[in-house]
Image 1 (cartoon, rainbow, N blue to C red):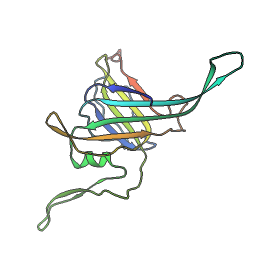
Image 2 (image 1 turned 180 degrees about the vertical axis):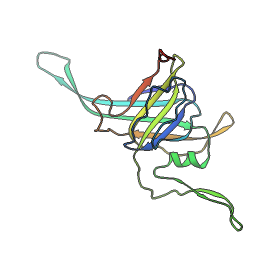
Image 3 (image 1 turned 60 degrees about the vertical axis):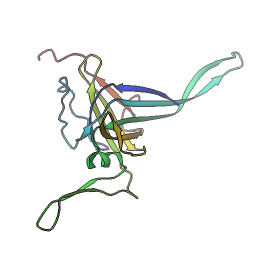
Image 4 (image 1 turned 30 degrees about the vertical axis):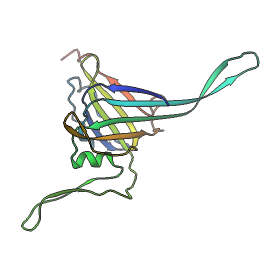
Length: 196
């Protein structure tokens, strides 16, 4: 098991886009508000903490001249992101279920308005993920995952009198990015721009 870290200790805003969508400009998020360009979609707000687990595996090298290991090589790594969306609406359910989407039927003379989500035999979809919350300094903290898939069990829960949807993402390695940031990149805004 890797190290589990609470990377956002309060409520945050969750955005997702299809894998490959560019990260929006970060110069404008010192207020904690962001309206990403392109195809980023706000899917909701977290109910509480956002957790990250990172699990590296190493092969350790020993030599005859030493009783201990003298070097380690990274052989595998895995990461996951988990949070609970604060609303148990159809959008939150679809966000938590692999490949699901909300279908809307408008009301007319003989039809009630309906939102529906189909579940079962869905296509696994790769997404990019952004979670925007608050840093310890009180400015914005952005968690950026360039490539991930939903991986957890989806249930409806009740917490503090509110319903929510737990969502878990398996982070995949994005080989198009530089070494050291192929899985997750964290941004902390530590001061406002000097011309603000």
